[in-house]
Length: 165
Image 1 (cartoon, rainbow, N blue to C red):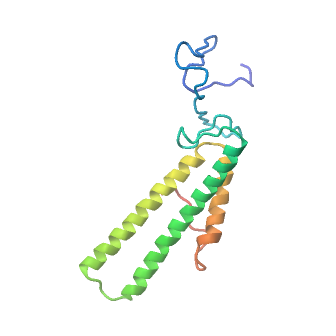
Image 2 (cartoon, rainbow, N blue to C red; image 1 turned 90 degrees about the horizontal axis):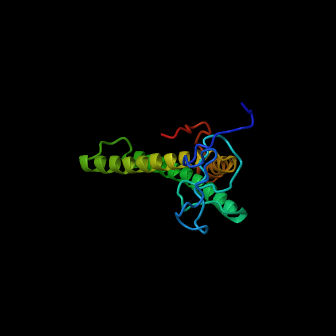
Image 3 (cartoon, helix red, strand yellow; image 1 turned 180 degrees about the vertical axis):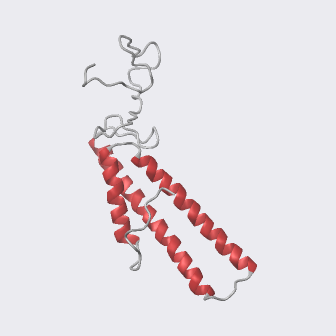
């Protein structure tokens, strides 16, 4: 077996000796299929990020996409900080006194919504990382760093959980 050979697990239409090129379907102007990697790569040709419409088509779309990934990931830290601040504000406001049932339910509902947003956001970031593209992975790390620097409070630990959920 040739050590340099590899299998294409794409759409299954790339079987040896079979060119399914355009077989009467579509036109040559049709966009290429998204490149789905299951192994680490630096290749950005035909890379789709989460959605088929978010496709890397050249250097500028890569640069804008990396900036968007940094901003999205930094935004996650903003949501986490907003959640922490809401909980601190709720604690200060109640000051150890017993809350009414409606106040308690309202506080719990808001905390649950903030938690749900964080979980959704973290899984979206996981999908970004699962492109297995080195550039996107670096952008996620840079975004987390920028977000921590911009949004984390003075007393927050840098060793907080980085789990998806």
